[in-house]
Image 1 (cartoon, rainbow, N blue to C red):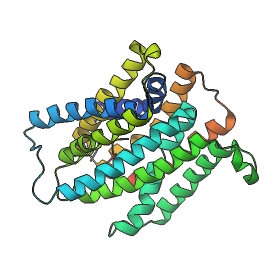
Image 2: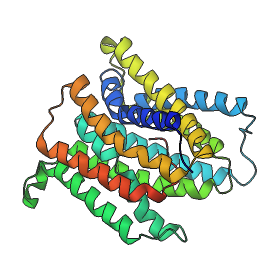
Image 3: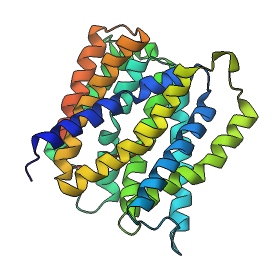
Length: 297
């Protein structure tokens, strides 16, 4: 279905905002450590999704037989998000933006084995190879393979988190065949809050001296704009237009993340980061031509 200019503009805007997510996480971590950051972000996000769902007459309480899948998804979600926040804490915002943008590639691999009729085609495989080349540049800085040790621990944790995100995307796709998508998104957040809170209370302390309107604003951005508004707008677009076309706009996210990291965090724009970003974007366009939904990250 052809998408009108206004919808194109909205899709581009929401993906630019998505690209800013790792930048916002990085800013918020100054005052709120990884587990506290996740707790506050998804408490805000869950409230936004719940209000949206109620306004649209969507049942919020799970039906009998839905709980096991939602609990498993929440545990998966909690692990992946915790690793993401920890990884961002130990790397640059620009590297995080590129790493996080690769989730469709790992989702494509999981889908090949878990979703009937969604095997890797020649085009999807080409997208994977191009994207992996871009990630390799970011990890190694363009050095020869024996310089992989250049990759810091944050990059590697983020890569592991992104692999988990790809798998979670496919598991979520299977769940929403039988469960209302808004209910899935809401309960993966709600059921994970206790785990985030427990981890925060046991291992972390809020840096109260750094608490101010900037880190608090970063948390609100993650909760309202990313966990709330982005979900609702994406659902609106996909409901009315071709999902594959809508998701293909995701190529702008890593570009947005790298540019905003340079502007807001002062991250250097090196040649390997620039080429890696372009490679990830091109691979994303190739691979997501038949994608369906973008999950919350």
